[in-house]
Amino acid sequence: MQGLSDKEEIMLYWDDVSDSFDGWMNLLRQLGGDSFINFEQDIWETARTYETVPHFGNLRQHHLLERLQDTIRNRWPFLRTGFLINALDTHFYVNDEPVETMRDLDAVLGCHYRENEDDLKEE
Image (cartoon, rainbow, N blue to C red):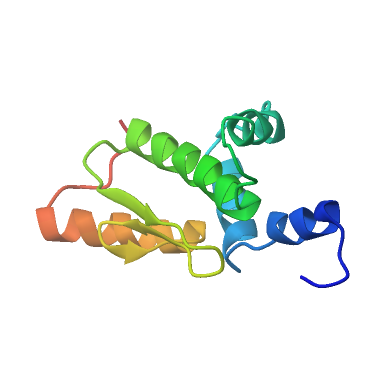
């Protein structure tokens, strides 16, 4: 990027994330994920392992989506979760459905229970 210092260019990459990023942050909070402890520190620690400057937006998304995935798997181990990371084109899936909000997750859970004829009891 012409005219920008290295520091300014890195900061642009920091925010180069999916529009769903804030939704995923909120979902993790709603699920009781205590995974925000040392979140930024973990990102910087990971970045230090690279020989060249990494894409910080992708690192942020990877750390967030890993934590969200772990939280969902721990609570509902029967759900399939996954994510694809590519800056703005990043996606998080539960049972092959895109999930960003609690409403999205509730829809996936309801669909799972209907398909498997389970009842909606709390464990």
